[in-house]
Image (spheres, rainbow, N blue to C red):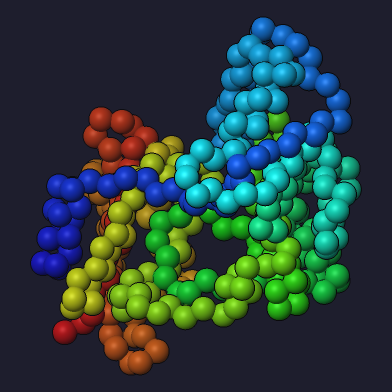
Length: 322
C-alpha cells in the first residue's frame, strides 16, 4: 500500500498528457480525383461526426479545397517518402489487389490510397457497430481471412472504440482493420484500413518482450459507452509494482464506473477481495496468481471530480505479494 500511495502522489505532481496514435506517413505529392464537382460557396458548412463532435468548414471553392487536401496530405519535412497519394471522393480505388467487402447499402464517403500499400476507405453503414463487426467476421472468414494475432499481453484504460477488428489474409497477403462508431443520426461511421501486402509484424505472433512483469498483468479496461478518455499515465518500479491511470469525463458515478471496470478485471482472471464507496471515491482490491505461481495484489479506485461534476480520475495499481 505504501508503494501505491507513493505512485499516486508522484502522478498527481507530474501530471499526464493524452497519447496519440501514429498514422502512416503520406508522400510528397498528392492527386485528388472527384466523382462530382464541389460547389463554390463562401458559406460555412458543418458536418456531424462520431463522438458528438462536429467539423465546421468555412469558405472555399473546388480549387481551394483541392489545394488544401493536396497540401494537407503532402509532408514538407526533409527526407519524406516519395510516391503518389490518390484521394477519391465517393468511391473506392479500382485497383486494390484484394477484395474488400462492403455492407449492403453502404455509402462510400471516400478513400485515400497511399504508397507503401496503405489504403483507407471511409463509409456509412445502416448497421450498428456490433452488426458491422459481425458482418466482417462472417464475410471475411468465408473469403479465407483469419483474425490477426492478439497484441502482447498488457493493457490499461482504453476508450470504448480503441479496439478495431483485425484480420489477416494468409501470412502477409493483406491486413485489414475495421473501426466502427455510431453517429448521432443513427448511421455507423466505418473506417477500413487496408495494408496489401501486410507489414510483416501485423500478422505475426508477438511476445510481451521486455514489458514489466506487473504491467503485463494489467488487462485492457474498456470505458463505458459515452465516457471520454481525457489523458492518462503509467509507470513501473524495479520491484514489480506498476500502475495505470486516466482522467475520464462521464455521466456515470464513481461507483457505477467501478462496477463496470470490476467486471472486466474478473474476466481477466483477477479475484475480488473487497470493495467500498465514500462520497469522494469508490475502490476495490484484488488478488491474482500468475502462470508462474506468483501472488499479486491490485487496487482500483475511481475518484469523483470536485470542480467538474462529470470529471473522474481512475487508477489501477498492481504489486507482487511479499
